[in-house]
Image 1 (cartoon, rainbow, N blue to C red):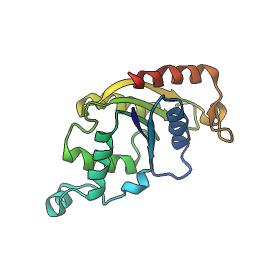
Image 2 (cartoon, rainbow, N blue to C red):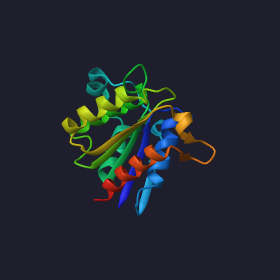
Image 3 (cartoon, one colour):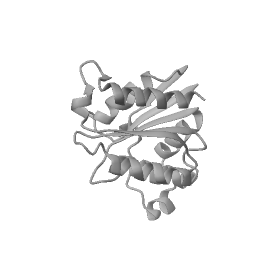
Image 4 (spheres, helix red, strand yellow):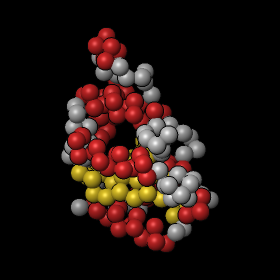
Length: 175
């Protein structure tokens, strides 16, 4: 199985990157590719840009990465209650290639934040909209109060209950 994982943010110090990397390490996969959204930076989507210049190469590359994967693992950062601009832009461009952005792949959606909300707003939005974009959402999990529940030095989820829930969910990607 080939797993594609990424944090839906362009932050280099992203706690969602730490979470998705840890979660990916728990998946029984032959190959794990962790993407950095910074490698897919492009102009802000607009229909005018699309009509004038077509779809950027980075959008096609991102869409192709999803198509080549057997399963997808995403951890969403939350900016003002919703997607980060970096993720939303990539999603907007790639979904213009085909609205079936997730290409029927099994997807596990995660989110975390430093506060008690655990980026639950953006996670709920992502889970609710995913079926419209051809995702097979196998589960979702919000990790609240990241710094209390994750050991950055050891790169591990230290809250046993949350870790147990995460392990249970990642096994669903193997089916």
